[in-house]
Length: 428
Image 1 (cartoon, rainbow, N blue to C red):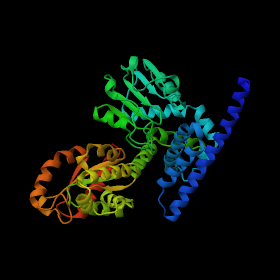
Image 2: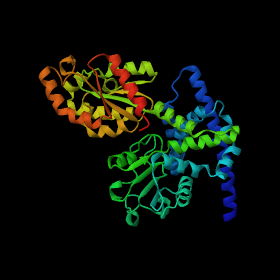
Image 3: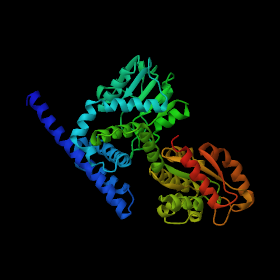
Image 4: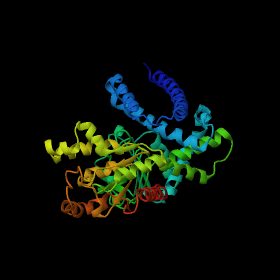
């Protein structure tokens, strides 16, 4: 078949795919509204996983590519629909082909990326910019970077033979932008590069928005590098779509408010602390007040093991318990919009930090040792062991925690303080 005929057929397929994608987004909006009416959870992770498995099974030799495509589509649908519902009372027209065509014409993607940079306070003028990934998003970022006066803009993609693990001549890059899907839900905690190679890096932008903090962003935070995720870019484009659909301008303050609302709704509240400090009770109280799902990791461990925690310790040992705990912590950390109560020893394994931090704000619930409960707790059977545990774990609790909350007065006050602190700081 001649090249031009091949391209003509590809263009026809792309046109059909675009129409099907827009229709899927419309149906996603309708499904969201119906789930709200029925009082069902807005996110069905089991269904999403079944979709991905089915796609993999049916896609033969390109199953990995098909899974990546559908994974990104599911994540995009989840956040985009919610953003549109916050920006518009009736967002159905936002998904029309006409609106999306106009978005491309006016360069809404470039404007959205520039807006995201401004929120983070990242200046790329006269900086060396490294863009990871060779898809459509990378072209948008490249155009924006050149427009803003970057001194060098380099696009690395595996399709072009690049090895992300070896920066080579680009190790002097000052700004790094990830436009790939590496680390995106549900394949959280995968990392595309090691920032340790990039000694001059001063800014990192990851266009992924689920999870809130990819391994790349957590690495940047650890190194004190200014960084931001892709949610502001997504919301900004939704706002421009709303303007085109309605003919009315969307104020920047409304865009910022929508970003804040999405941050608050999708973030997890994670409660850590000593055994018997009231973690589960306080977490359940927060769930009731904020109408969020409650995940008790100890309860999930019991379900998985088919026996109580004292029985696991007695029959299998602490090492087996910690393995199950790490697995259940990873599952819980992938969720969004939940309240998670951990076991007291979750901080003993530093590998549990990233799963909990990726979508969550972590609260260390403190309580006077004499008030801690010890009944049914295999590692804190008496006051002497409590003192030893406290001394051993205190530095770990502080390492994990974003904030410390005292629970010496009442459960209600502790829950209220966590909710207040969460709303004040969730955007950070």
